Length: 317
Image (cartoon, rainbow, N blue to C red; front, side):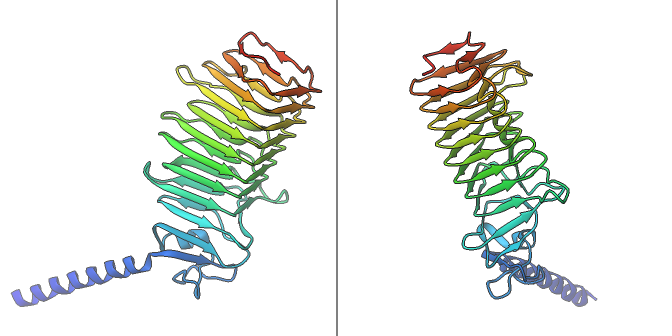
């Protein structure tokens, strides 16, 4: 009887070890998706998966999911360091009624999203947010198109320090903001370069604990182009703009404070072109302030000067 029990225990241990080895082997450093793939596949190049969600469980932390050919690869939740790359093809996420990508990883994890289109057609239910960042150390958004969502294009809502870098991207037709940073604790640091924000509720929205820097980008046909507005006491919103075109928005080009602002809301500007906005070029509301460093061209707004400019440092033009 004892020998029988020992044999059973050894068989159980061997089975566990084999299962663990199979799981470890299943996670590759690089996996693939295809429009004609199958999530039952191992996600190799010759046997790709169908969706990003199917591939991520078979991708090791720090690995990469790549797209072999054009396709819609489904919404995705990311809980570990990973790169998702659609380079060389049309890699899409159709996010009707859901978030396109949710990032809820460890505060030590690095996420890279590259060459992906996140889109909900007007004929379907609009998506919620294009990308929703709940937790990560660093998130890189490189050459993404996000369009037609009912929330924000990129929604940074982390509960701890988080860094987000957006480059060469286009965020259009979002009912909320193109980018909104609003964190309960920690600091959300967002850097944007060479990107466009068109026909959103707000182009750029900095709220609680946000530090947003925008360089050489176009912010047009939104309601408010850029808005810094902290809605919780003892927090602050800071937005820095350099070399941006802020044009043809249906309200103010730039607004600091006002509305629900109850804490410090600061916009710092230099070398920007701010024109043809239906509202003021620059507007300052309650608890808002603007710091300028010259070389801004402000014209053809209503008015061109600054509305409520009590808290302004420097000369607008």
